Image 1 (cartoon, rainbow, N blue to C red):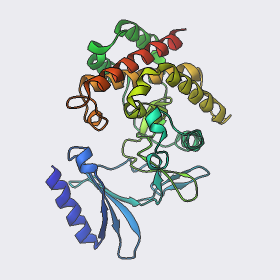
Image 2 (cartoon, rainbow, N blue to C red):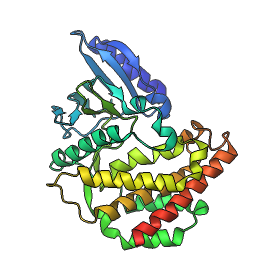
Image 3 (cartoon, rainbow, N blue to C red):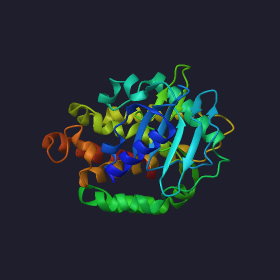
Image 4 (cartoon, rainbow, N blue to C red):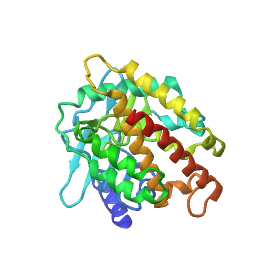
Length: 315
């Protein structure tokens, strides 16, 4: 598959007379499922060539430039035989490259968070009338739970919480996936740029916000895994900022409970990642081949935080 993608990329570049500027590490990160590259057209315009996947053609094909958010234009999309798309290349820096210190504490700089929340809420407003497919449901959480169960302290209570909050999983909102620090840009005009929009769809409320939180649990310094209370304080501040930045025209019932249900899901997913030893753990010295002590502390941190979150969900 990997070689096929590279051949397709080469063929498209040759056919369109593009110049290859940069190859991203998508092939390696996705085990050969997609290839993404930056190219220059004959006219000198930079474009993104994505082979192996496309985002919905209904999702702002002409792009979007708003007060806080920019979505790139879609120049070409092909889903017949050879799957690829060509879209506008946004110039900017990835959030993870701008906020390089806070991830070791499991946090994001508040100034950057405010920018991200502004973009998140604007996205909720502009995308609510876009035709998008539902992505995932309660069954996905049960799949994560099944994987995580051998490492969990409270699986019976969690199952009850999931079933008692059935409406939460059914209440759908626009979601980018991945709304993460390595998948969002800060543009020169200080707006947030959406890149890699392939899995945009409808999911439960705050799904995107979870991607600002849970990846940092893997990146934290080992000593921070002992500081569950500190992370809980951060999550409370995070929630408070979500509430403060929410536009008045957006009505979210039981916002606080929905937030903690989302965190619960993210924690279960993170524990499931440990159970199946996902590849990204190795990048942070955990899992098979990594530090056993660090892995154990990470798992203990996740379970302890989950216990605190459960209290907030069922209070």
